[in-house]
Image (cartoon, rainbow, N blue to C red; front, side, top):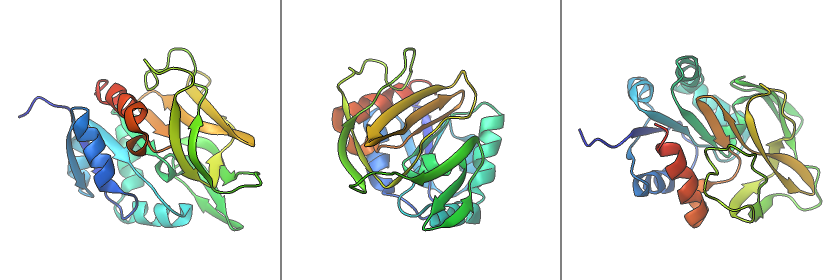
Length: 207
């Protein structure tokens, strides 16, 4: 036993898992990339990555029972963090190209296309984090994170006590959510340099 928090990155065929693995290892976690349900259930923390289409991510996630793994961990109060489409699939549904896909349903609401003249929203952007945030502790208001997405959850209808961080790309959208054991970021912390490392360290220190 290393004494380090053990994090599983759920490997369901989506996302740049190695960059996320390296980022978590740098901030003190022992990291395993696997689709194994037992390992995912037993780990101190679970990261759910995601890149690409919502429907494809949900299909991959269901193929490894990832939706059930997430639900069981959250029900037991065990930490889960979703990243990019890994955040989006936590909501009730996603609508892409006119196709509606059922998500994990941890949070109510739909993920829809950003109504902006330039899509995708790609590059560095600031966020508006609420007071009391654990993820953004120690980070200044002008800290920038790396985004690459065309879709997002744009309204929060979940628990009022959840901490919701917003950002704007022509229109406001949800950049992060902290809701009990379940957290998520629309941006890529593993691609966000020192700021992303601080956020991941803040999360790992809760495990």
